[in-house]
Image (cartoon, rainbow, N blue to C red; front, side):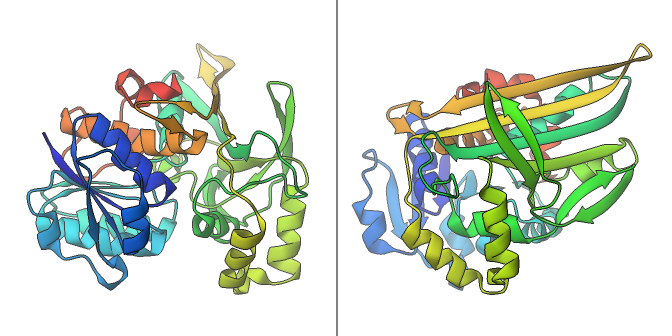
Length: 355
């Protein structure tokens, strides 16, 4: 039995702990809130430990651990990765934050263990799927990634309910977004690039958000004409966010916006994840397109009910951990999502949720 530590006991972190326990791992769950940690209904055998990682993580706590998986806010990423490097423990996270990933990459240089950031939905699965599709072409022209984590039954003007980290949500709406435009790697503003698209008869809007491409811009710079990532929402959402963030300047006072969202927007377990990965390019001299599209709803999975965002995020990092344990991906240094074979991922007991 491989021993792993999961940092962060929120909705996603606790789901990771449960899934790994059911998968035969020995799990220790860390969180800074003792009352919350003890109140969680978890399988017997999941160990709980109260640790304030904002003050740093003692590498000794990772001694004997195969891996540490971070499900904490992006600003705590470096503290966990630094402890993993000191302990020689494999490191995986879910961050979408570009700066945090650069810190992880720096710590991975010369490391004896693997550092695998961005193991969630986007970046994560969509990065793996996009890279796999690109291999089907003689020459790739465009790669477009569209992802939405949405309520199935929207009931407010935003058309939105909280299903994951509010802090992470706000961060991706504010920070600059990487893209490739006309063959050049550029930075584009969040909330721009608005478009309308339909999936399964439902109309959505999509717009630029930060972090969803992971390392794809670096991988495909100079190789494609266009590469971009956009978040999908129900129509009207983006305009309201533009008012809040730009006109009312709440992008400069994130703590206020986070407090408003937390107190005014309800969460839901009736959610939906919609994704579309579209690649165009030349095959035998002809312009062709291939698409991977999925709609995933909340459902029972491996011992309990899971929301769609838990399935696609927690399930994804668990699949990557399995592949690491099986030696199917690199076990040293910085590992990109593009280094993970899609066929192995989909064949995995956790990754099968994306089939």
